[in-house]
Length: 139
Image 1 (cartoon, helix red, strand yellow):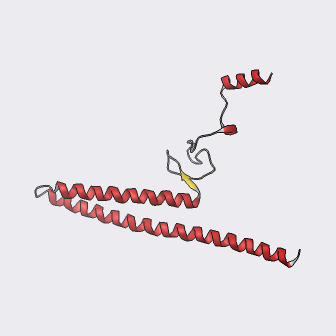
Image 2: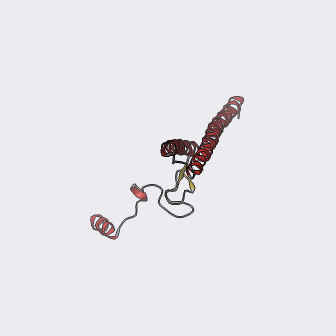
């Protein structure tokens, strides 16, 4: 092995480490943003609770309660978008049935067995009728 090979292998290893570091930094930024959004949601819940409590003695502030609920819905949508973006960077997908994080390559959930993505090509199950047709065609 000559020095060029050594340098090339070192360069490849450094590039891989740099790429992984970039991914970790991106995920960390998204996590920080998610924490901020969660704190905003908690603050909105507190405001909503105060308004509902005040409403017991006074005329209800329906417009205030409604606007707070809309703001909470918007923040929750933002949080869901951040979660999807983090999952994309981590190369994972959430199970639609139980919420378990699974590697993107999985077709079925590791926790509950629910289907994560459509099977195509050779991965698809062959029904009895299709198997009979294939057998007839091959004969």
